[in-house]
Length: 233
Image 1 (tube, rainbow, N blue to C red):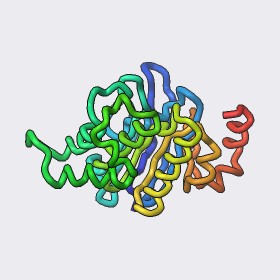
Image 2 (tube, rainbow, N blue to C red):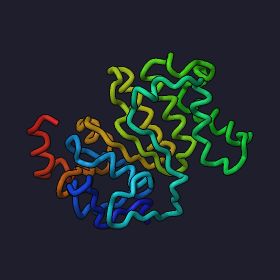
Image 3 (spheres, rainbow, N blue to C red):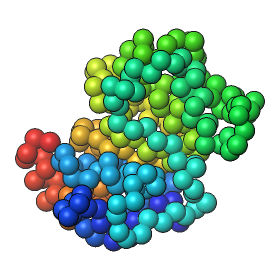
């Protein structure tokens, strides 16, 4: 059974239709890379899945006991995020806010979840450090640990390696692969790194006026990929 299914989804910016008749599904354990040119509507699609943007028509369905509360989200990095005046521990722990309801304090279980998320990413030594004083790679790991506090089943990543150096990029890709293959977390990731998408993903969603969804092998042999590759994307 699919965890997420999009049926005839259309997204528009004002009067301009970005894409139409988008149909695809994501099953448990999939690694879906979402590619396409800038402005194609990739981030808008992910925000629609998360319920953060209702500017769409069609259906976005959840199955296999998935709920929005079980989806972790790492948005595209911004300068505002990088300047948070808080400790790495406080940032990670804030990923548990959706679990708190009306409680004013974090529970022991929520603190343990945050601790486990930092341990999983090897960043326990950063707990007391100020977030804005960390390197770009360290900041992304902290934000990923924050997303993991929600990601019981699915992790949605919007350009997770944007702005990172070569070593930090390799490290982030290694972590994401481990989360998918070892921890069995479904990955949905926007990326401009087509080589990475073809190496690690199970499926590719190419967002354009007429979206194209396929397995990696099917995508490699498609006209959509050949045209995209010619443009040097």
